[in-house]
Length: 484
Ligand SMILES: [Zn+2]
Image (cartoon, rainbow, N blue to C red; front, top):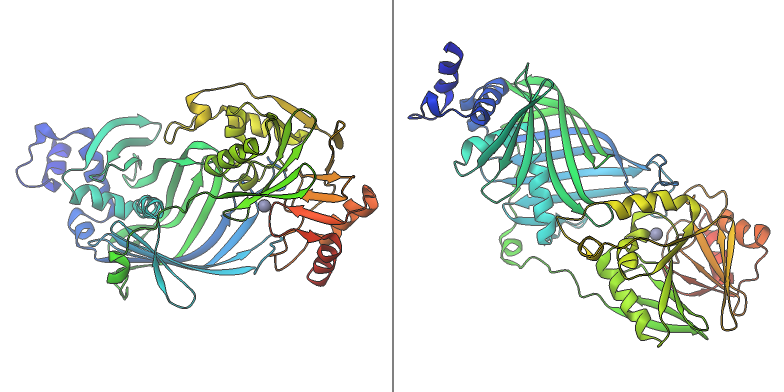
């Protein structure tokens, strides 16, 4: 009973002990553990500085291999708690072979429901609504912010109290409808992790989970020195905090008025163009830098690449079907990287047989089996079994109208599961990620030339790519050799 009275003392005046739900109790205990309700409510700003690795999900050499990593330095997140604002600046350096500038500066903000981005020249632009939603969740994934939000906003709904080992767990729904699961350590009473579900184009319903540890006292408040975020089963960012500053110099992190007044940019319309490159071969370009290629056989069409997501790939499939009265029956998925396999599920939903390197198949089966209930895609709405044709070292698709030879790219440092195509009649190379005319560096150019000329002994005149422009092969080799 004594303990209960204690809990009551931190509740708002008028609250009665009989009404203290277990959910409210853990929140109040957490506020106490963080430094006391008054202190938590009085904080104006928090500045978090540190560094750590940020792995790049969906870009590993093999589907189950280690993720390539960005090393994040000069990380600084400024949070204005009362005004629901956040600004994050960081420098990230690729710890893997990267085709463009190795070091990038990022500067992104959130002001209420307005996401904004700050360019290298200082120009501020408004970000899309989806960015604002993601950043809000990111902002809430900090113990001080989420506990403060619950204490501050009486319309926050708490439910689902349960125990799991030494964790006490509560479901939270904010007044904006954001749903988060907050876990607390039963011993210290401090928040140990926050989880929220979101949609990922490839993986569907995924948990974004942030764990807090190494709590340390800063001016009477307990704040974590380690903040570790995962998406699904993949590590996303492991921040080691070098400094937490409470109510220090925070600067102005409000979005400029013209940015707030500007509408959130809508996603651009999906445009697919079809450029004939040889008899029975079309290059599907248009929006963005992920292209697909269509091959016309005697009685069917085959697509090379279903990229990015359902929107892009469905538009590409529809375009391919408009080119001929022959049915589109197969899709070749060049490799497993997420930007190249984002159309896998819609391709299966559209009844296409998937041709890919054999080691992609277990990974693709997993992607196909996942739930997409948050943003239901075509396959979620009408499930269909997948049909695969596995390519080992090579495969030839051939009839009287067309011959397409598929080859596994061997011994490449970035691409373990990559299939490129060769059309002997036209001496055309079709490829994804072997080369992009817009890349700054061609770290694996020598490996690509070895694969084409020494291993496969192909005579190429022209390359027709997924990324970049169509070029003469001689131009591609010259560019790769000039900027290794
Ligand atoms: Zn790519």
